[in-house]
Length: 342
Image (cartoon, rainbow, N blue to C red; front, side, top):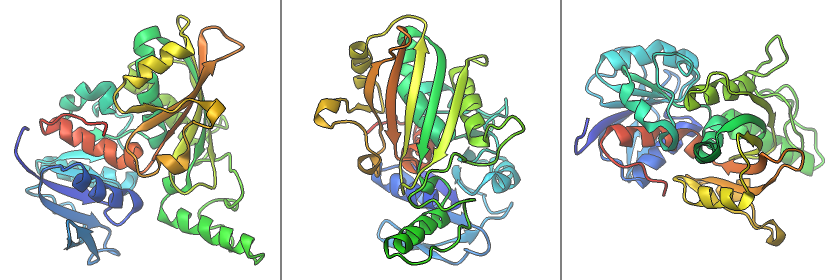
């Protein structure tokens, strides 16, 4: 698909990830010949900025994708399942940010720094993994290549932007009320207030008490690493942070790997920035990761209970590398470019 420019569509253009997709396309200099923005009928007609001009948002319909080379979806699983096949039949490559196709065995689940070759096996649709999964596998894959992973235990600290703009507004409104000693507006997005709180629930729970987000991390990691039996367990928590997810990861390896060697490996790995000098207050932070496209890793240390295990602290902007940037890196791969970590 190597060409000098491409016609690109974004479905879900008015959402938080859709906005980042426009930003990242422009920042990375992706060769967009023409950009078409789509949303639901409720948002059709809105005007959004693009390269110093404004584009009018169209309603996403099954027959609206003709002539497009790439269509980036970030509008939820139901819309993706309904419209992605139409876009693919019209000749576009769909890169879908929802959960609609991730575990479909016919659909590649791609993180370019880990398994970019799988993007070329697509049949019209490529799935973008969950934001929490993306940042974890980018950091763990280089360690797996060196010492083979035996087990992963992860606890996440996920920002409200992972739920969308309404959740961001809700947290800020609750925070303002709480700080002003005024009555808080009742929660609408989450089951409990998120301001000054931590909610050990990200998505719904299954019959075993695991949340859907936790099982996404388990199943997607196994698919990306091509290790269907890999032991992975996750606890996902929503925290009162606007943007960027943080993760505490314990990884058990087949053979011992010193923290010093892990730092050397990760420092040379694409898409990873090591920030690891805790004695001087240097470690990844959600605030400093926001707006960046890297996965930041720090607090790399031995697990005192297992000589083959390491603990890591992993942070990344969930709207960018966790969604928009990863999707556009996939398009860059298919378009004949080189995936950049800058």
